[in-house]
View 1: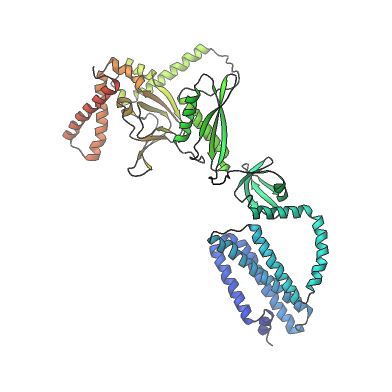
View 2: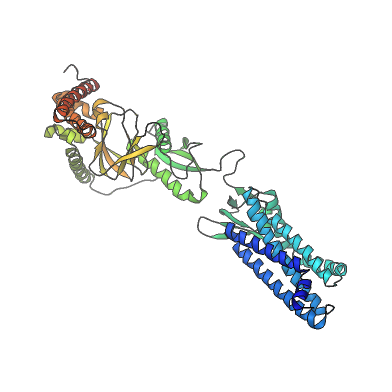
Length: 515
């Protein structure tokens, strides 16, 4: 008998050996292409498969020399067959559980998959031992006593294993869930037979025995039946008692709901409510729903910033529950600060061409009526279509001008404003609705001038309205002339018509028609 014939006979026949090698190779290649994540297990299976083939070669050589009744031949054959079957079971398990079931969106618990594979390995071991003329029933009887002794000494380990099985079969928690156990909060990274690993926001990994999870109260974040996976966050801030609660609540909720924020759910929307009264201040509570537990600190910081800017714009400062003492020359400090502020206001106003017709004293008076407004990055400074009666002058920062595209919900950026730029002049002078949305690209400091602050100037010298309407008309027609390629005469005529229309609007808006 030739060696190749003996090798095929040892492997169970030529057809069995050939089909097994081909099937294993094809499945392994498919997994390597379509499931790269399982390559480590594939390499282990390939190594076992090659080792089994090597064992069969050695067994065939032993049979050629000493016959098939030799004990070494029987053990080599049984061991090689066992490694052969283990390799096939491993590749088949990866193919079925990781590739096929994933493609049809069925994902059984990992422990259930491990149990099925373990049972298959056990059946393979019993089969291979029986082929080596081993008394399997006697071995099972003897191993039962050993198993009892080992089980008694490994009660904690078995408790962890059973806990892991229960957790995965009941799907109490799953990989990706954020949980709290005792004082540990983190995202479930892995559930193994003995322990569960969670990753905290501090970049630490905490290993928790499964028996601890089964015996303790576990809080699973962002999980409510029939609801999106969000977690409610609560923040507090203090404001002095002399401010109306409804004004504070409305201001804060508008600031938090107006523009979408990263990791903050729009439904349910963020809310603000009055918490409690203290001796000199009231505590307010903000509630919002967090979509990414890993960004809780950064999102809390963003919410607090939005609240500070919103309150600061309406002249409300947060209260500090402590006594503050200053030992400075208050009058000297106040005068110096007011002098610098006046110079800054006047310089900002002089940069706006719209106010060129104002006399120096009128410009100084108008400068004193500018209000400092601050916006956080991402906030809307004005919104397209909203009513407005104010003009803004940017001191520091950048803002994007965005215009809604007809027939679409999205807006398109058309310009970027920076230090010294102004916008909203048509709202100030005519009360027209905003023609664009302006969003802060960074933290923005700006001055705001509203109708009430400019009314007295126009009432004292109504002729200013004519000069300002001429400037506004020329500014508008310049853009139209470029877009429509107007001639010089057509441009002049349109300026006159636009000026007349704007002047009428300005007079009606400020009540100057009798002037």
